[in-house]
Length: 205
Image 1 (tube, rainbow, N blue to C red):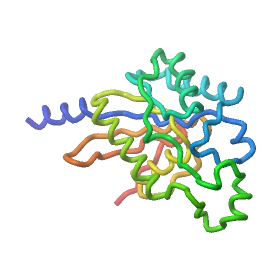
Image 2: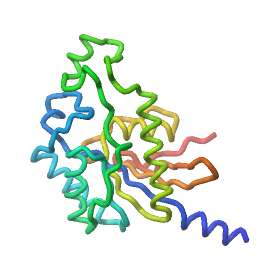
Image 3: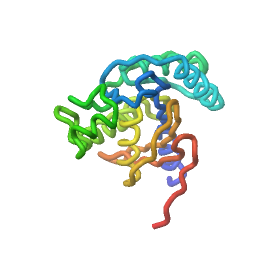
Image 4: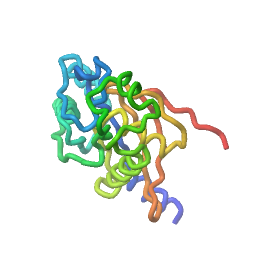
């Protein structure tokens, strides 16, 4: 019975590669992109191809992304390499909206609002709730699969924080972070395997 239960748990777990989109011109300028639909630049497209080559070393079942074009194009470039079409856009994987600070450089935004409370911006708490909700839904819709999900640096960091309880490092453009999730009743238990392709050391409790 135990062996069968363990096998069922492994078969229903989901492996997710969270990939940040490639570089944009606003990334170079240090601007807060948020929900602004800024396209990839040529460097970003090459970064997406590089990520695709890394991901092609494994087998993947599904490819999804944020609806914003910089994530969608990154996903399509990766899909061409790994042999998967982008099957869905997930609104919950979109980047945080920065309100009146959107489009400003980080320095200019700090000059106006040094406390980081940008008028009209999505709160850090709401961002984390939304991101975790989107991640958990992947378990329910892609049980037993390996999924590539292309998103944004801010929301990926927020998701990782909800899983580990610790602030996540900066996510590189086209950086790959891998998690494994398993639903347990009303909750989903997640384990972070890598962040920016660097293995995560487990803390002893």
